[in-house]
Length: 245
Image (tube, rainbow, N blue to C red; front, top):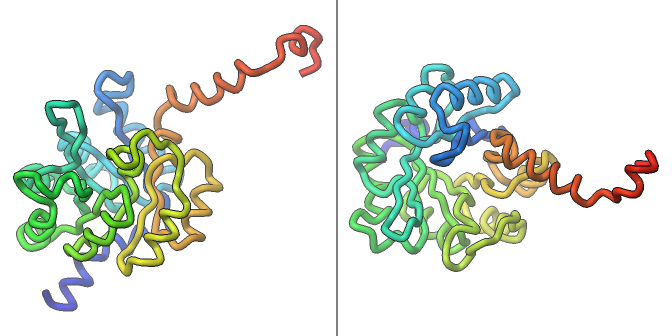
């Protein structure tokens, strides 16, 4: 590939450098799982200063493309027979996201997906050559990140840390993992997952992350409310009665 086409292909990632990306998604059954609602949330976060969006599913990617020219990371989620989620597992889903305006295609690039019918190293090549789109490798470990870079991914994100067998049920940011990935990779590193405080965004950027993706801490009132409600449960009721809180 020529140097000029490489520069063109990487431009959306460069546009995201140093910015906050907001993931505007809602799980099935969530009260916010509504196209108009999610589009309004997307408009709101863009007005608040988001430098780009992460979106799942053709209708939402298309709706977000209609409201902004800022970069959109697009993906399609599917589930296996055990209910385990996979991110853009085949070329058809990558093309669907691309066709409605995703600038960057997010792929599950963890070790568990190497034996899939369409392994992600092959998908990276096809997305580059047939769609001319950038690929964001969603990974869980340093080994995943290194393998994704070798396969030609344009950037990696720590999206799946906490959601694979070796990292299962971890719900906090691994700062050592971020430092290690930044130190070993030459492609951009996006920090995504378990960010709950603006100071963590700053810390990630200070450690060398190119950008930070935040979802539930901004877009999900249920999750946000639960954190505040938990704090309220720990209050000393005797102090409340005395009016001394």
